[in-house]
Length: 142
Image 1 (spheres, one colour):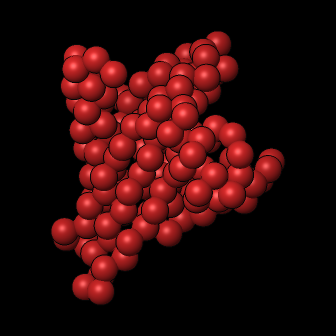
Image 2 (image 1 turned 135 degrees about the horizontal axis):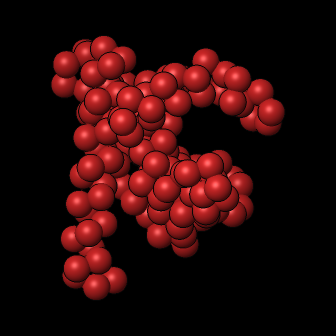
């Protein structure tokens, strides 16, 4: 990876960490809670998905929660921009951009770190987590 590309990737990850910080604040997470956001290549995300879930293939976001004894929430969110770009392209007719999708994934991963979950399949978008996610994404993208 070229140095300029690495700097751009880190700058984007830093922006997404600020998104996570906003969600932590809105969710009233205990002071000192923190989420690191890391952007992974498609190959690295496939490997992470296999290790985390046992599933083969590309996924868009993986989140790990590390609750602390003092109540703080610490976590890691891994996002794949390649998967995000594919989702954005699929939603482009509805005005979805790559930035929109990266923000959505940062919010989604943060909510998972905070303990939210959703069903797989058609009920996913009707879940409490999904509704909350979309409310936060709307706030962040105004």
